[in-house]
Length: 235
Image (cartoon, rainbow, N blue to C red; front, side):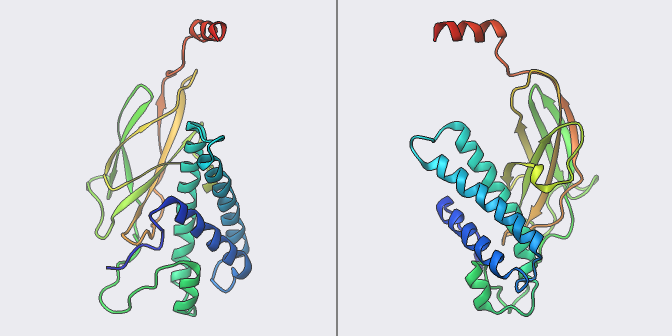
């Protein structure tokens, strides 16, 4: 069975990202990627390297730095999935060049598994406080995942309007399920939160992103001001 190009261990995935970014920066045109795309991945990789270092160093490892690392890892995988699909479609590249990039060389015999061609349809199931439950569907009337889809990557954004910049979205979770519950951080005021996602096949090749959906969440999760002041006095 053909394995995914992305290493399963975090340390190996971070090293993969560094190698991929370095080679794209040097030879982006050769791989069929334009300079803007190569530069954007370099920024994503730098953020991952810094976040991973903080999350794995004893003196800087906290819940916040670990969460930042997870977000950076999700953004790297999302950006890499898009670029790898471009590279894989470059007919002039040799197997050796793809292996140098850390990309799986496709088996030429048998029936290949295509990258997902359709975007998920996201249905809002409901909210409970600062949690939202969503269902990923094939379309508005058909439940489940499309053929050859292994799972999905889910991203969120908090703000009045869904962002056009892909880097503004925050990685939420990778899932093989079609119903997901997303917790949102505490807020002193009500928020509009947005959710989008894209399907992935077993080779981590991604399809187009879903049309974002939004829900309005109430304020919540914050400690009362009196409790915060009492904690400061006690400290």
